[in-house]
Length: 488
Image (cartoon, rainbow, N blue to C red):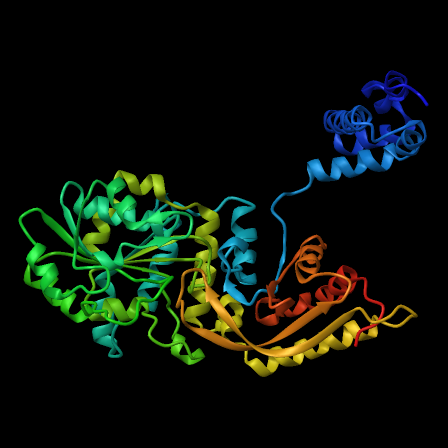
């Protein structure tokens, strides 16, 4: 048996490996520096394995015979993208960890058309002078936020409502508070001092804005009198925060929006509402009740509404601020706005998404299409996948995968309508040679990765959040993950 020192001598140097016929071809494809790094990594692993006693002379000989393939795999790993497409089979439409709202095809096309070359992002084509990037979406927001059915009244009201875009809703809240309340007090209910995912806490954002928190009421009950009693000469605005990712029930009380608006008017104070999700779509049409929309708040008299672009709106990540034109103008003039503003990619995606709303072509927006998908259609697709899995079976191996269809519920997710669900049909998988967690792990390791739910010893797949064009791939990866030969 060879000593470790002798085994080390069997290893080629990095230069020798680079010059070998097996590896030299990679340098022309990926560049010598990248190939050299891959060779170093591969050889370092072999040295570690020798040092640990995992490789003897015979095993090392086998490993050295595979150097070309191993270096190629290392190159692919090192030079491949970390951000990857996954199949979201969880049924959570706005899955924060999976990127929230998928971008509409029209938005992707508009990005390609405008971002791959020069554009009129801040150039007025009529005057030939510098323009403002806001104009590309401002006209669309004005149409969508028209608050009255009468044509004359609609124009009058919408002209007084302006919208600006920053990089996310936390930034929108920060900008609004800094502009309107820096150095002064902001009155907010103690029951609305929420924390959203990623440690976004209203008190922390308020502190960064330079505003002073004045919390009123109790965790479960806050009356309008609590707000009124807290107002003093230092008060700059009233803040209302939508509890978008949790609900309170039982012995609770919350000041109504009408009461808040009346109090703000009485004391000549702005009322700012952080809606979070910010729907511009009638959610009641898909069975989701009591989730406030942007238009609802503005119609009720809220002065400024902040909301997200990549939640119920179904667009790119953005923070949107809509409200009284004079207040929004102040925010646009705040130097912080420039630090928080978005780029041409976001404007292109947002413009295309808003145009779909203007045309009422809701099914081109993936988030809306998923919400609107009927249970019967999901069940039909689930049945078709079951058939494909069965047709991939056969052979002599005993049955090891059982699949069945179950009634279930999809979630909006993303901190939106926490108690609202949509009826769906689930594919429930049980693999007799694997635990549910092991099967889920194999699905995550597939290409593309499949993200599923595990519940009660079964892997659950909800096609509401799977694009129809992914059904064939999903069927294939289920078969591979479970090593299926036959299905019961």
